Length: 79
Image 1 (cartoon, helix red, strand yellow):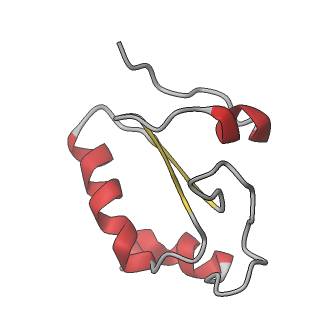
Image 2 (cartoon, one colour):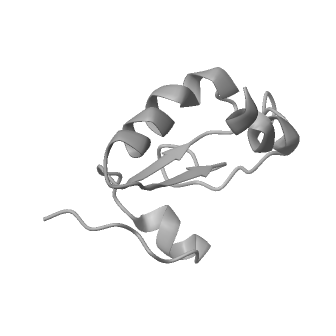
C-alpha cells in the first residue's frame, strides 16, 4: 500500500520513492508542465510535490543551470 510522505526532511524526500502521493521534479521543468501532477493530486487524496530534486535523488534546487525561478513556481497556482 502506498502512503503519503509526511516528512519535510530533505534526506527523506531524496530517498523516497515516487508514488500516487509523492513526486519530485527538477527545477528545470517548465511551470506549465507541472499541471498534470497538480491536477492528479487534486483529483485524488492530495500529495506532495517537491521541485528541485532530480530523478536520481540529487538536490539541485533553483540554482542549477536552466532552472526556473522560485517565484515562478510559487505563482503557478495562480495561472
